Length: 239
Ligand SMILES: NC(=O)c1ccc[n+]([C@@H]2O[C@H](COP(=O)([O-])OP(=O)(O)OC[C@H]3O[C@@H](n4cnc5c(N)ncnc54)[C@H](OP(=O)(O)O)[C@@H]3O)[C@@H](O)[C@H]2O)c1
Image (cartoon, rainbow, N blue to C red; front, side, top):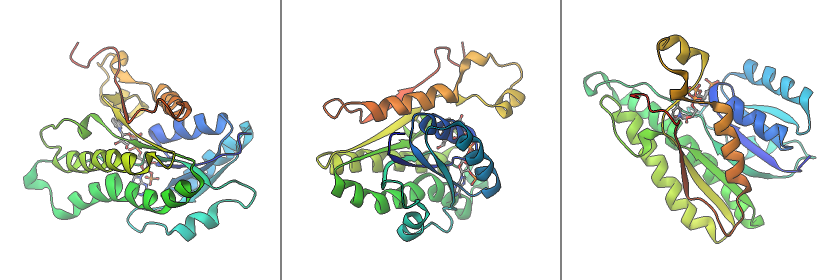
């Protein structure tokens, strides 16, 4: 066991499950967050069978975000304080402006930007005090380039990118490595394969590979930190 504690948001599905697995298998104690409590409990049971790290579920909904006390109370007493935060939870529902109401716009902001902001606001002071921390904010191609019908998603991920780059500068001298991971492409999943049966699988990113790259970012030495990294599959969708 590494004796480090990581909080991973959006751990119930998709990429988050792979990050949870990668970090737990590498000895982290992992606090797995999302709304779906049942799925989280199944995942923690599965991970706790594997060792070497331990895993627990922390149900959170960014519509009613947790307080620092909620988070601290969820961390088992024998675990060290949280030193790794992976803001992976995301919301994506493209629509043209005529169909985009304020509620839907806010939902993108709430999950993709305000949630990560709140977790950073709550966890960074203690990390900075201990001079130990790694924060990875999961971005998307939509954090650096725009697309038709993606205004709410683009706004929320551009905002998260700005937040990441600014806070990285604010906290780097307190030995906090904050980084943004631009996932420039679509992540492979059974749902995507079903949605695009004709598509060449090589045009997807494998979520297990992405999770490994996040661990590599964590392992970077303090004299060579990435402020941002982007990942794309070797074959573009249009090839
Ligand atoms: N999928 C892609 O092709 C792709 C491409 C580029 C970037 N990304 C980014 O990669 C990250 C993961 O994407 P994904 O496709 O793997 O995600 P996903 O399968 O859609 O899962 C989203 C996760 O976020 C959680 N979540 C959603 N709303 C929440 C809320 N209100 N409060 C708390 N948790 C909430 C979900 O859990 P519950 O439903 O249990 O709450 C789930 O665990 C996202 O940040 C996404 O923008 C994805």
